[in-house]
Image (cartoon, rainbow, N blue to C red; front, side):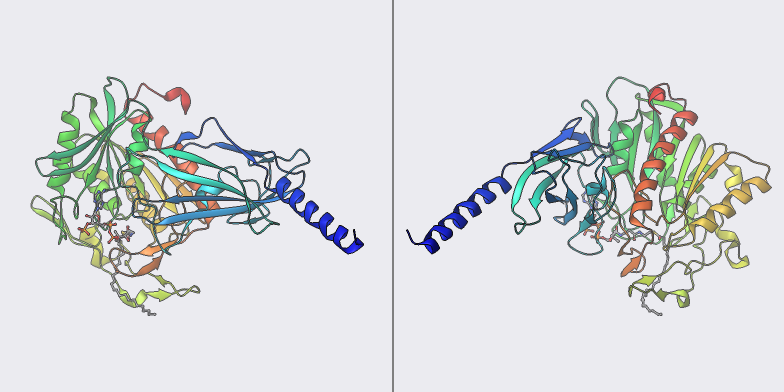
Length: 440
Ligand SMILES: CCCCCCCCCCCCCCCCCCCCCCCC(=O)SCCNC(=O)CCNC(=O)[C@H](O)C(C)(C)COP(=O)(O)OP(=O)(O)OC[C@H]1O[C@@H](n2cnc3c(N)ncnc32)[C@H](O)[C@@H]1OP(=O)(O)O
């Protein structure tokens, strides 16, 4: 056999041998299980790699609006051919360093400026994990599917149509009674169940309340009526599974001022979580029987374009303490319950940090100490549940265009985990809860 033919044959054999080694199935191990709750951490290991092999781990999910969210990270296997996400560093990709849950919190939407949407929390998200070889045009070495659930076994999800009240109720497993919590989401209407369903797993009956643009509620609003929220609270308290008399409120963004008004002007609200909200009525006037809180004034000359070409509206809502806004301020000193004020220092949606300072000063000035404050430097506006993909910009419900919401992805992700523990602790402490204390 001529030497050149022999060399060619040897090359082809070694190419196929290398290829078959490289494409050997890597094992993706998920602990404690591949079926976990969305807010629970998990451990992931890839085994069966070539020692020191460079691989890319990729995560992908499709949300309930059909938007694909993806993340990726490059790792180098150790001498035993293992990548352990609990100890190995990501060298590049959607995040770097040791981040056991990085593949989850760093996911970004393929359609820019999208928020991860889960409409019906009785079904899980399926996250596809793929291990690819970085030296062989991304050849797939292994994969796994991770289920991220919203409801524990035995929890119940019940759509609500009661009088004018529309939303979804979540019950933890067991007979109860449990403390009740009303969950109010942000401007834009619709119904968001993610936070409420996960909170119910911790031992609360949670009513996720829609207040417009959902089911047969009005598509648009000109004002909010406190009576609607009163009806929702009365309904929640009337449930045999709900331990009274005091209930909790959790809010974010626009619903922060609604929560303050409910806690201050309606009876039996024992604990209110206010996340990056305002201390005065915003966007729409708030009607409370014969009293009207006008929306705080806005100054659209304060709209800016930032370095990424995104609209920034942080200073558009004028100072709630300004004379012109005095009638918009919520009289929070009237509240009998406790407050947890949560403010992100890099909130670009509005100055929630200032609003939290003003709210707590008002309480102190009235001799009250019924509040806790937590501030997150470098976190942005939308503080959500652990491992929620970061949402730094999106279509703003009041502006109708993409605006910046601020924040640094890693810091924001850490804030999600920290805040979630604080919220549970706060509600268990102030809502006369017996369960789950040991876990906190
Ligand atoms: C230097 C000079 C520069 C010049 C720049 C020029 C700028 C020009 C701008 C000019 C504008 C001037 C106006 C200034 C006004 C400023 C006011 C400032 C006030 C700021 C403070 C306001 C308080 C807040 O900040 S609140 C925070 C805001 N929050 C958000 O914006 C939320 C984030 N965004 C979103 O969530 C979405 O993008 C949203 C809601 C805005 C829109 O999304 P979409 O339209 O897709 O709606 P969906 O919610 O997804 O609903 C679609 C559809 O589904 C139904 N639905 C909802 N939930 C459910 C469910 N659980 N089950 C079933 N169905 C559901 C829903 O009803 C909808 O149905 P429809 O039939 O379509 O209605």
